[in-house]
Length: 431
Ligand code: EPU
Image 1 (cartoon, helix red, strand yellow):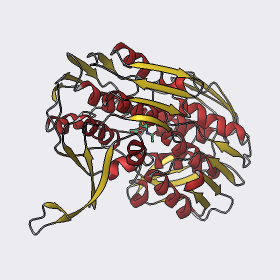
Image 2: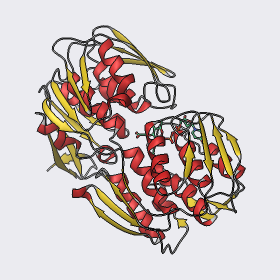
Image 3: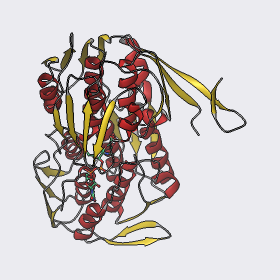
Image 4: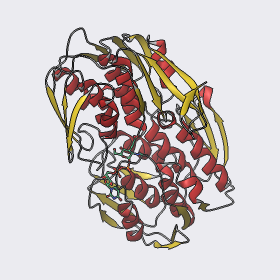
């Protein structure tokens, strides 16, 4: 049960400079990948988010030594003395990326027993492509008391994914690093964090070529060593802050970004009439007047990321005209629009298409965060709205954004956490 809500006093412009944190989805792959190494790895630039804390619990449960210094954004993982190859469901279901423990343990020990993964409810999220890849590498896979058991000595193989999957590409890449012989993965996802994970694996001794294209070639090696590594900045946090800056008609400079990762978003913001400039690792976003409606279609990288569809649709609620948003990756990623209707936004949903009719103004209201990016979208809507917005279920946001409220408050927003108590009828009251 959540014990706090976010309270946003809306209608303030964001102005000033801030930095972007290390990537969530890259960290959630690189940290499990350390299990493939013989020695300790020091990972830098990790975000201080709830999913990382859950991952630490999983690693410690396996017997890895983890030294996490969130203030220094640094973690040392020593996987040399693992005591277990099993992740119980009560841990695995707390996050999506627990699926990477399967690929890492299978690749290293030829055995893993892991509960099904959790993560945001975005509709059906099968892992059949992960399992298909493991099977092709020679793993025997079966269920035991609701847990997935994977075992076998792995051998390189040619694997063509039936659809483009980020998690599947990374997971099979993890398993194949220490397989005997060569693996070729085709129809791979090309997201920046796939390249980052491959770079980390190569740093510790793997032989992976082609990450970032649709074909990844892996020559199996018998041993991976420990090494230090710095993860890339968070593409989705960068985008969320860019959208928040525009949504409040603000003027914000973001440091520590990789502008080329942001090209799909930048192109859409420019099309809407928002000023975006970049130089080196800095992106600036400014909006003085109204912005135009657009047509947006989510795609795998380098297309428009599904993870920014929700924050972007908050911005579209006040665009001039009606926008069309097509969600191609997940079945159910529009729940935030139902919540935004309580704030005066106008939208209709027809299958995978949402039509968002721009309105002159949103007003504050109590709303519930449906999932991580949907929660971020509600924060943006709250920043735009007149009056006070209360966001319930805000821990969904803390799962994946590092200190979002403090970053936004440093730019001029007023967001605070307030405790919730329940009255005798089970209704939430503020203390
Ligand atoms: N799919 C299958 N079978 C599979 C794998 C995927 O049918 O075996 C389908 C999924 O159901 C979905 C599509 O393929 O419709 C794409 O799924 P993908 O595997 O690419 O996504 P994921 O690995 O479950 C990761 C991120 C998500 C992000 C997606 C897409 C992590 C931990 N999660 O999920 O991040 O939306 O890739 O880029 O890396 C988020 O950060 O908010 C988030 C949801």
